[in-house]
Amino acid sequence: MASATITLNRKARHDYFVEETYEAGIELFGTEIKSIRQGGVNLKDSWCNIDNSEIFIMGMHISPYEKGNIFNKDPLRVRKLLMHKKEIMKLFGLVKQDNYTLIPLSLYFKGSRVKVSVGLCKGKKLHDKRQDMAKRDAKREVDRAMKERQR
Image 1: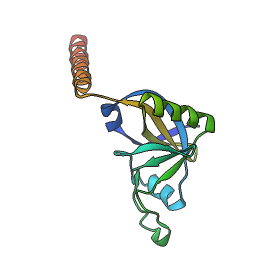
Image 2: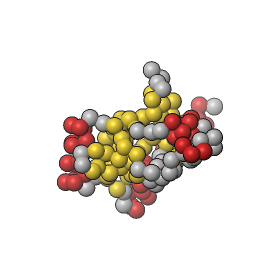
Image 3: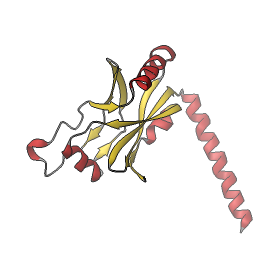
Image 4: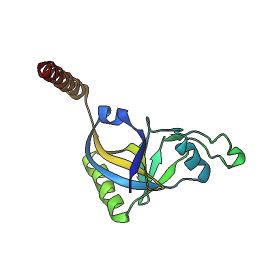
């Protein structure tokens, strides 16, 4: 089964250290799927929350489907993620004890189903972000030099 990426949360890797990733299904309605197929989804300011041993995604924006009229749902509504209870309880323990955050990293198709890649993340401080930028710039310079040398 091939998986086609719908959207990425680029800001997540900039603001957080991603420790682990988990795959989860997502509970959607028909007009939301049609809108996602057209690319009308944004993960920028979204996060996940665990409540009553269920995991929910908050702040994910799915644009209303233009031909959906009365069947369209609220673009920012809370959506349930589908994971095994054992995984959810493990994540719940990590989030409560070790100050981790659950951030959706990407949305993709796996077969005909929409899946969410959820990252177990720790927040970055400003000096960590600067250090990452310095590493990225150094790597870019090395790559440029190697490319020039190969010519």
